[in-house]
Picture 1 (cartoon, rainbow, N blue to C red):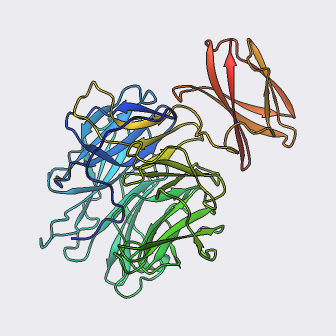
Picture 2 (cartoon, rainbow, N blue to C red):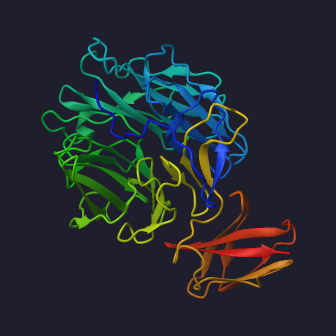
Length: 452
């Protein structure tokens, strides 16, 4: 059986919730449903893929979805025609449309690795197979994942068949698929294969990791692929071989966390890239305490969560150079995360088996609070408190974007700003506290404003 690249803690624990996160009910009728992947479409629409967090190893074909910012989540079954097939990942593009990749991952089965692509166009009620000829070479094919850049263009990628990686591409929403020719893909090394895992995507670029420590990358929506060596030997190796994980906040800016040493004494080293992974910096000792990492898109801010001690949340505002623990040790298990902005994001928990309860996923209740990440003084929002209007001063930039969220994380206003001062009408907002996020280029600051 081929190993998954990403692993998650299996036993669900409970504890006090930190005020920066609001617990939401994922709606699963079974307890200990974890979430291996969270995919944000916008501030209201989010899909999440489930796995068995009980420790029993059951094969789970389930998802949950919200269209109201997490106030309600609706779970569903991913019906791919066979309950033993394993769901690798989910790739949604709207509240209604999503794709999944599924594989026969039964060890010793003649069709082990044979893959299937399924699509839903009715928010997960029904799933239809696409590309019946894709990934069907028994003994060679192994589908690793599917990813859609928009509602028309997508790719599905797997291990080499013969001397070329098997990659298929569609430009009409999956109605027709065409295999990417080997001449458009960097040749695999001897014995090289990929991992079935969540796709790495940012800034219109997609990467997948291999057992030879390389990252395959496409910058043209899957038409061509190149490979570059990362500073490790195998992205999914077991110690004492070195392994690791990579994340990206844009098409160019990325971060790699390598694990080496032994199980008893692991060593963690991080690397950064500014050219999409073609070249990496010299290794530097990782000083964080949590190691499930994800970027705030388009920034150098990395959020770290953990489902193993020390559980909780940490943040780095300088591309992983320094870390601030936002929660004390032993707070609450927090798993895979995803962020739309600095104040809109979710982190995985475990369901409690009560669909009317409050467990399974955590939503930010405002910007992650750490010095330099929140109320900096370069951009100013005043007066505070305010009644009907506020003035936003951005002295160093000519244009900026404003996003206003309430304490639940719901976006209540967006606006383009021009010039060094802008007046914003807030008379229609209800009385209470709001977070004004002002962003321009790579600068982003959040100010908490009280509306009277």
